[in-house]
Every structure is written in C-alpha cells, then in structure tokens.
Amino acid sequence: METAKKRAIVVDKIQEIKSTNSFLKQICEQFPHFYTLRAVNQTAGRGRFSRQWISAPGDDLTFSTVIHVSDELQKWLVNIPQITALGIQELLLSMGVKSLIKWPNDILVETKKIAGILVEGVYKNNKQYLIVGVGLNVNSMPQEKVDIPATSILDQTGKKNDPDELLQKFVDIFSSKIETLSENGFAQFKNPLNLLLAFKNEIREVVIHDSVIRGELVGVGDDGGLLLKTEDGAVKSLISGEISFKK
Ligand code: BTN
Image (cartoon, rainbow, N blue to C red; front, side, top):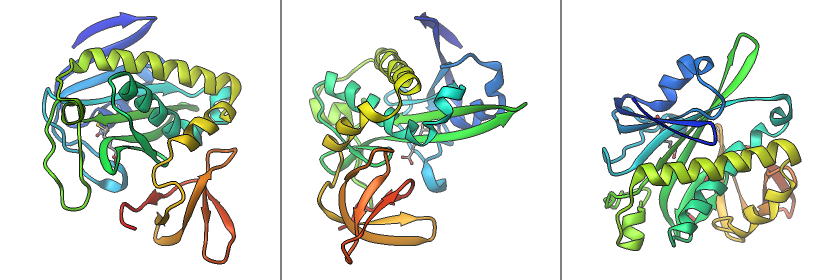
C-alpha cells in the first residue's frame, strides 16, 4: 500500500481487492478516523440493494472511508449519504461538471449516473463505525446500460484526470462537511440539497423495502427526509428508499 498524508487524514491505495467496503468492515477498528482506502482494481464491488458496482480498473475511483462515530455525529447518521453526495457534487463542480443528487445518495449528470455511494454501519466492542464507499466514474467511457444510463468526468469534459488527485480533493471536502455536520447538524445542508435534488417537482415511484409509493418529489425536509406528495395531497417524509429512474 502507498500512503500519502494530508491534515492527518490517511489515504492509502491498494492494487486489487474484492471490495474496499467489505475489507474495511472486517477490520475498521484498526484504522484511524477518516482512513480512506482506494482500490485501483475492485473485483467484486458492491452497490446498494446487493447490486454489483462495476468500474474500469485504474481509470475510475473506487474507495471507502472509515468514520468513527462520535456522540455528536450519532444524531446525524441518516444524513451521511446525503452529505457524501454533496461532497461529490462539490468535487464535480470544481471539475466543471454540474451534477444533481438523486436522493439520498446517487449523483447524476442530467439523468445519467456518475457516482454511487454505499454507507454501511458496523458495531465493534461497543463502538460504532461507518464505512462510506464511493464509486465515481472518472476516466472510463461508460457503455449505455439498458436500465441505468451512466456517464463519467471524461465523458462530460473530454479531459482525463488523475484519480488520486481527485480523491485527495474529495477527502478534504468530505472531512470538512462531516465536521460541520457533527458540530452544527444538518440545518445548513438542507437548502443546498433542495437546490440539487434530481427530479424535483416530478412524479416518481419510490421503492421502500418491498413497497412502492408514488408521488411528487417536493423537496427535502428539516431532517433530510424526502418529501413526497401523494395523490391524496398528503406529504410524506421518507427517511430511506430509492427513487425510480422511470417516470
Ligand atoms: C450504488 O450506487 O449502489 C453504490 C455503489 C458504491 C460502490 C462503491 S465502490 C467502493 C466501495 N466498495 C464497494 O464494494 N462498494 C463501494
């Protein structure tokens, strides 16, 4: 593993691993808060809902960050995917790529997916850890998939980028957002999230476990929940779920 240190945050790189999330979940207590591991080639990357995450070895970013959950951060755990998404959105904007957040944790350029987030929690010896995994399409030229169209930074800008440099930039942005969340809570992230909400004011299906709710995506509430206006005019606040790509 190669190690680079900045502001006491360790960013490591491993050539090949099945999944950075799975690896760190097993031994997260051995790593410091914010330890980040990038896999150049992730051979069994996992997405949400047991999906696969496929990336181009060396070209794209696949990494995970270990977060030691403090008492302060504990209150805001439900918001971590959204804060991670805001961090990726900010990184992309600095590369000239305007993106939107498909609540709670997909990043889209128009309707094409450019990044996904998988947050997993672990308890060890009465301590709680989060593994925040991110897959970001950087230098690959994604094939159009039948169900979910994809894009990359290269696809959007025509320029190749150094994945390690992008990761360092992201870690700086992300760590400062997590500090803010921990100290001040979610309030200041609500407006940015509302402005960046994909499919806002559109009618969509949201899948929650085994059920589906259809309604208009009216925004994000004070706690970061998705506000969905159903046919009968009621506004429901959802704390988890997945918005369907299809109308
Ligand atoms: C999704 O869109 O469903 C989430 C994708 C998350 C993929 C990343 S890649 C690094 C980390 N390791 C994994 O196995 N998954 C996450």
